[in-house]
Amino acid sequence: MKVISLFLAVCLTVFGIVTGTVEGQPSGKAMTLKGAETLCNLSHALRVVSAEILKKHQNATGMVDKFREWRHRHGVKGRTWKAIVQGLEKIGVVNGSEMKNVKKTYVEMEKVMNNMDNALQVMDASFLDIVRVSYHVVNASLSIGQVLRDLVVLFEKTKDEESKWCCLVKEAGSSGGENGCGSGGEGNCKYEAAEAPNKCNMSFTEDNSDDGILSVLKKYTANREVELTADNSTKCWIMGTEKVANGGPGSFIVGTTGGFVTYKKDSAVILKSSDMVRELIKNYTLVRRGYESITKQYRDVQPTLTSFAKHENKLKELLTQSPIVRRYFKESGKKRKGGEDEDDVIDEEGFKMRKQHAIIGLIFFAEMLVM
Figure 1 (cartoon, one colour):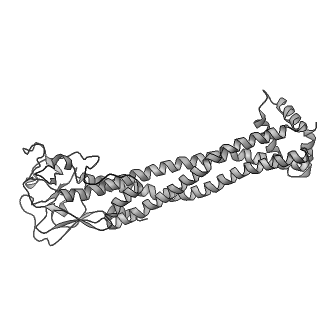
Figure 2 (cartoon, helix red, strand yellow):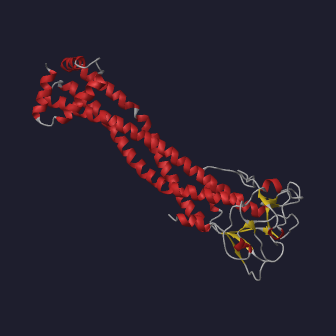
Figure 3 (cartoon, one colour):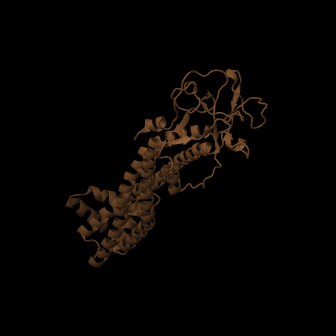
């Protein structure tokens, strides 16, 4: 992944023939409505991408953790029951027809465990894809989205029927009223950054679905020019670094510390989003597919987990129908302080059986049962 390129590729670069030096008051350019929308729509899309990837990451983590916890907890029971069933079959404590039902019930229990194992294998692979992408993309897209958002500060507060552009900073105590901006007189004026809107109320329908997000991003797979106007009557300007203001290349910055960007005639501002957006689409698609894969496994397997307890209860019922086994459970329970339930008895004895690999162990277990 090109993490660094995510930060470097989205920059507003000045193109055109620039000669001489900037003298006197800035001869800047304000954004038009179209120019502001160009930045604002991408800003909104980037911030939504960041939020959606983070949400998918958190939800995927929850589903995977629930399955891992279930597998860990029930895996012990599964191995215990396997040892018990195999041990009972070898020592012949349960008669043939009953043993057949016991084995059949355990096979159904084992299917639940196997389905869980297969689901976790798929989910872990998909989750790894999400983790690889999310930490980098979330931070990068959020940061870039914030920068672009700050470039359309006060847009909704300044645009009206007569003013079709955006004021990014305003001079403290400006005489221009609510929408007034400082003229930037040779850097002697003090400016205050306007509060950035959380959302942009632009001419597009907000769609935070995966397809909606991708449709907005695809509009920025080619570099786009930010439309400006040389009409200085509103005293509204675009902010940037001093190097950019003097005609040099550079990236725009958040408007809390920068000065006014001044452009000579025929200069242009290009939103170089193509590389960054293509990489973002690829990574977002990877996260989306991984999340859909995890969701599908969770949706398909989760409803089947309740059958594990049903099969376990049936095994208990089948085994305790045998007088010898029932007597064994009863006597084992009496030996315990307070008398544990059948789950405790089964867990402990199953653990013992797993340690008894030799036939002597099985014979010893049989002797315990018939005591």
